[in-house]
Length: 334
Picture 1 (cartoon, rainbow, N blue to C red):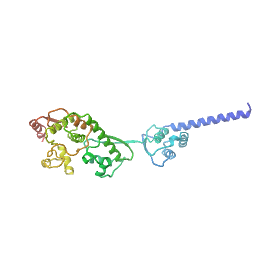
Picture 2 (tube, helix red, strand yellow):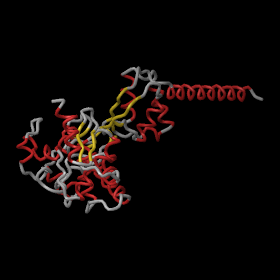
Picture 3 (cartoon, rainbow, N blue to C red):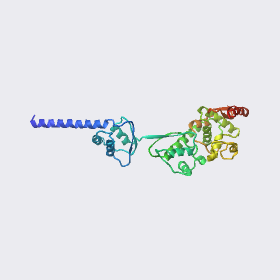
């Protein structure tokens, strides 16, 4: 073997070793955990490219060798095609893992819990005040048109399902409302299909109205089917429902925390001490449990109930028994 060939082979070997070493350094830098304490929120705006992100990581001291990370993206260019959004960098995450979520657009998610028993006005305020959502300036009529111009009852009340909804940064409030509406229509339709026989409702919407009343009458989950049985029995006998939450809803902003005798006599479309049957719309956003109770009530002969003061109720079949319960649980305490 000639001297020059030996030299050439040595140089090639040195080059290969150098290249292998460089690849090792690049790979190590790309897979090295980022230098962060805890989790960090990281925003990529539109127009920002991978090199801009690496520069920011370097400026923050989160990557030790920014140039090696840039070289890694030359080797794996598909990871450099990043998407704008708000992301979460978790403790222990490497630069490679970060660019994997950036390239896939796996944004950080937030959530909002819409609690059963509140009203559409309550929920809209909560949604519009959430710092991660983009608020809506829609009017009441625009909201109805947004969901369905022929929305039964002409009101959004009751038509959204109480649940926890996840979303990404700056999601419009409209998106959450649409999802909650779809969830409610689907759940109500399913519950209606498997309802008990001979219920005094002419439509799923009437069951939704009943569910909203049940929701306001008790927070004790096991009582919901029993509360439903009382109202169902009263409807069957053409008796007035005589439920305070409907009176309160009908009073609107006039309600100051107390119901007086004159309020019970004041005619409104919602005052079930005055009107017979159901009010024209739901009075709250009901839960799945209340919808189930409205469509699968207990089979009882009870027509009355009174609060026992501990969140639960005493149920009665006759007015005399009910009056005794009122004296025991309400009047004595006063």
